[in-house]
Length: 268
Image (cartoon, rainbow, N blue to C red; front, side, top):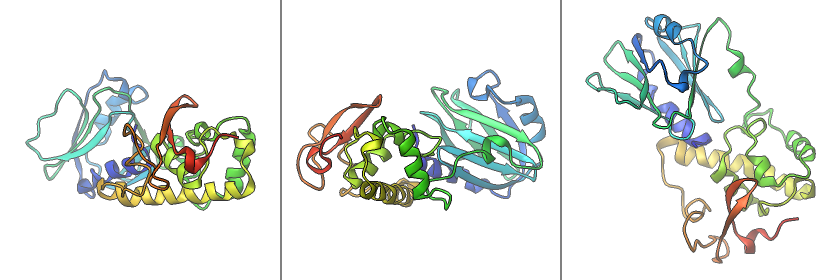
């Protein structure tokens, strides 16, 4: 599933449509990606509106049309956005196509249809956007907020907790592994056992990995450098970039997890 940086990359794929007006909207009405959308209202009301801005928050995207039209997209596991030329013919997996005045098409495709589209027409941002938790890189995401959440999840393994979107929006499986590896925390460590110094390191590397991911992947889907865990975590016989010792993969908190025993130690 796309994480914070991948979502930022896909947000930018619709940037060529900024300041252009919508001519028409095509949707696959019966697809579950529109399960909470009044598709008739979307098709009727979006034409004539100009794409004013786009935003990301964790794994969510928001596209603002005119002054009252809010289009939200969650990519799910296989969703992708793209901008196509006017002669592009939609495929069966293209569930939303926004046709623009100058001939471009904003396309949302999702082969497995695990994503979700939202649409609201109102003068204020909709609740599904304004009520999202503070982003990890926002000023509201403080060290005290992290400490409080860890205390309330004291018996849970830290790997599972980092994947909880209500507090760590946008952090997914590979980012959580990267964060814990840089912080030298075993992914099975119970949150209540994390010492104050370790919490400070965790907070620092949370922000660091988010910034690094946005810079490398979110900009142009660049390849992370080999001194990240990222490039080694799925290789059979993968080697830790820090210790040059073998990495380990197993399921923790219901998710496949990679870590370096010689670098991160054991669970506590």
